[in-house]
Each structure stands twice: as structure tokens, then as C-alpha cells.
Image 1: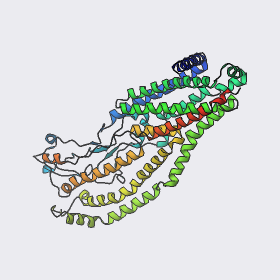
Image 2: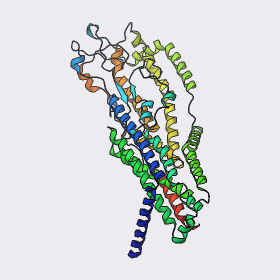
Image 3: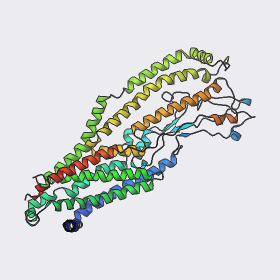
Image 4: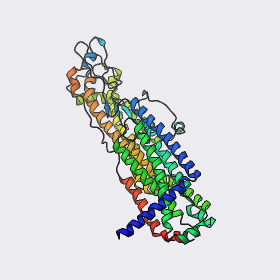
Length: 475
């Protein structure tokens, strides 16, 4: 038994060596691999540097909250510090001086270790929210950068998208017609006559091509992670494993097409058709199915509802102000409160009604993401993008959790500052030790479900290829 196994191993090693020589002696193969690696490495270089730049420019870094300055020596005036309405309500202390210690308080969505895979989407999504007693959905004074998202999408693709597009095309270019061309030239008839198991030659050719593609993809991926200053071994390991599974799935698909009794040109067209369907048609169909399952709310309807709530709270401003002081009898009401204080309870009431309207969008996006993730086995390219989103920390479920955590923290922040604002009470330095704190978001970059689904795809395709391997023996 050991001798037989040793002989089979030696035979397979000889086939691999022969296929390796055949591969490198074909200049077309070398040109294809070189073009694939250059494009992928260029994308990795840009993505890694862009991720590092994004982290350097992020105001919060890896923290969930960037609190305001709490240096009592710099904010002290005659032994008193005054609170503010987060970033918009003035508070007057002794001598009429104004202090705004909470002006720069921001809650952030920390980027995870795989940011280099999808950095442009992180920038497009927005990862900072400034705390305020005004609703961030109606406050027009935010200083966010204005841009056209459609024009931004015309820029460079992220590394994950480039790999999801180019790797299957490289597999197709290197593997299509391996058997069909030899049949057309009459060479395969001689192979079948000389080899009792010609399928071993096909498997050896696929292994050689898989190895070359994997080396290029893994080296480029490692380059992207090395250039990202905040990358983690956890994210890199997940991504490299996924890349191996992703390449294996496409190699198996190409191997099955080698079984078809068609010309090499027809095999190439068929593989391109599979690539187009799985890369573009299937994700579009899943997106349609997800929206049919849970329709995205109308933004126009949401705007109309917000305007209606604004009008109602504006009419009830005096009643809401009186009700607030009645609920807080320990705070003395002001005879002639400033405009900012008079409208503060109305702002809080407005935000409490607007938040649920806007959070529906995040909930639906989360449901759509999870639906497409469950069916990502139908599209390897979609699985690559979803995996990159998970590793970068910009997946819809995590973003919805971030919005919910930000809302909860903002409520506690308001509960801490608003009483002092409404009573025009000063704040002493020890009060800053009682500032509300928040727990960081979970740092579980992703789950293994997408990788496992793609692995099952690859295993199933491999079993089918093994079951039909004797079909290669037909000249």
C-alpha cells in the first residue's frame, strides 16, 4: 500500500512539473499573470495608503467617542465652568464669558482592521456624528462636506472590488479550452492513448494555475494590509482565507467547463457568461428580492413627516417649555429665557419623534444586508464585497448598531447637560468626572458564515468534477 501510494505521488509530482514547464513556456500565460498582479498590486498600493490616510485624518481614531476638552485650568473662569447645549446653546458664566467644553464632542464609527479592502465606502458612509440637543436630521448647520455620490463612484475601485472582478477573469483566461484546444488539434487523442488516467493531467494543470493566481492575489492582499497602519492580523487572516476559497471556486467552475464537448471559443463565452451572471445579475436579483421582502421607506415621505413634526413642535414650544420645568421642580424657571433655552424642550421633543423615522432606513439596510449575506453563496463576487464590508467595519448591521449606540449615548449626554443649561447653572471641574461614558462597539470583524458558504460551494463543485473525471478520457 505504501509503495503504491509512493508511486502515485511521484507520478503526480512529475505531472505537476510537466504542467509547470508547459505553463511558464507559454508567454501568454506569463503576460496574463503579470497584468493581473500589476493591476492588483496597484489597487493594493492605493487602498493601503488611502486607508492609512483615512485613519490619520479621523478625529476619533479607534475610540467610539472623542470627548470635548476637559482641562479645568484652561476652561476655568473665576472658579466656575459653564455647560453648553452640546454644540449650539450658549451658556453665560460670570462676567458674561462663554465656555463651550462640549462643542467638539463626537461619536465615531471606528474602522476595523480590514479598512484597506473598502476604504472609499467608509469615507462615503460617514463615520462621525456630533452630539447636540438639536436633531442632527434637521440641523442645517452641520459642516459636513458636500459632494455628489454618483461622481464619487466614478473614481478608483476599492481593492476588494478589483479582486472580485479581475480574479475570475484571470482564471478564465488561463484555463479556458485546456482540453478543447487539444481536442481540436488532435492532441488529446494521443494523451488518452498514452495515459490510463488523463484526468490527472487536467487536475495538475488546474493546480498549477490555481497556485499562480493565489500567489499573486495573496501577495497583493498582504501589501494592502501592510500599508494600512491600522490593519490587524485577524482581518488579514480572514481575508486571505477567503481569497483562497474564492479562487478555488472559480477554478472548479472552469474545470467543469473543460468537460463540455464544445470548442474552446464556446467554452470561453460560457465562462464569461457565468462571470457576468454571478457578478452582476445575481446581486441585482438578490437586491430586488431583498427590497421586495422589506421595502425601503420613501425618503420623500420621511421629509414630509419631519416637516409635519417640526410644525407641531414649533406650535407647542411654550407648552413644552412649561411642561419641562414642571417635570424638574428643582430647577428654577427663567422669566425671559433666551431663544435657545426657550426652544430646547421643543428640540428634544422633535428629535424623539424624528429618530424613529430615520432609523427605519438603517433597519431596512441591515435586513437587506443580512438577506444578501444569507444568499451570497450564489455569487462569489457578492460574497467578496460583503466580506470586505464586514472586515472594514462598514457593514449595515454594524452601522445600525452604531446609530443606536450613538442615540443612547446622546440621550445620556443630554440628560447630563440640559438641566444645567435650562437653569443657567455653572459647572465646577469635578463635575467633568461624572460625564457619561459609553462602551465601545463590539470588535468582532465578521463571522465565518460567508467563507463557509463559499467553501461548501467549492467542495460541491470539486465533488462533481471528481465524479465526472472519467469524461476526460473521451478523445
